[in-house]
Image 1 (cartoon, helix red, strand yellow):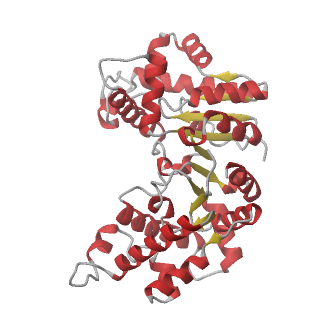
Image 2 (spheres, helix red, strand yellow; image 1 turned 120 degrees about the vertical axis):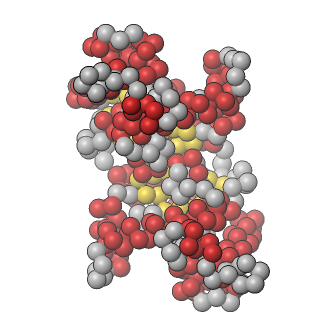
Image 3 (cartoon, one colour; image 1 turned 180 degrees about the vertical axis):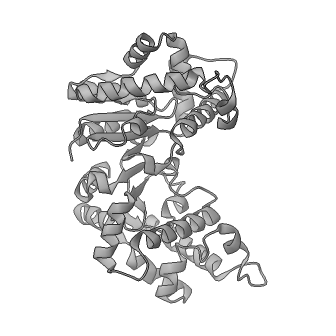
Length: 194
Length: 194
């Protein structure tokens, strides 16, 4: 089966964003990552920084706390509104033209489309730690602590909005360890599957 | 990185065994699946039918029950002895020559080898159901019930002996949905990665 849309979920520091961009470049189709945030900002009025953080990460480590905090009188949180807008923007983009979409639970949002290839990129902790230090520099917290915190909050967000377990192999058509296979080989595989 | 060993874990009915055999055939290396059972039978004295079933499946749905039943005075069950022999046979095979090994937690047993590519093959329930009916025929139980039972018992076995979650994306270098990608494409990808 050939695919029109590639969605990429990724562990922080796994190089999933780079793989998405390189794959799109090779296929001559757009890759939506930061561009997605611009579009969501336009539609929602939320600040880009807020979307970047709260459109993929729970504000707490556990979904339970996240589920019941900051509700308005309809029972909706800002994060719920953001989710609904994100969902609409992703569905509109996927309906328009072949593309690569990085993050934001796109594989869940587009799960009923037969032309969508859903990809998960992950890597071992040591490889990811090296990568984030190289890319974002040192912080007061160790890179391992930063990664664990990000993983925990992304998993909580994913579980709350999709009802599924983040990183469960069955949620994706293909999952690749970029640390073992290498970024270039991951791009080869995905471009070939398109 | 090139790999000398490919280990294939698979959901029952996903075609993982066929993918292993085809990949090995294309690469001109042996594939250990039923041959593995013969070797384990030889070393252990257990019957092949017993090894086939109890070398990958818990006798109960939950690891807790499995963990505390049928112990001898050393605290070992038959299944524990089988695990130890299975472990030794797999390590010996991997040390001898390049090969494909299907099932039996080989990716966990060989996790410290840098030349080992660990693969997980899965597929959606409807595709697996069709496949097992075609391959093993109808039974009194529905194919969906048979698959759910197998999944549950294999997950329990895996968790008990490896301490890890079966089907967690991070346990494998590459995970493929054979129902969406097709058997042939899975073989192409794996043969190319070798």
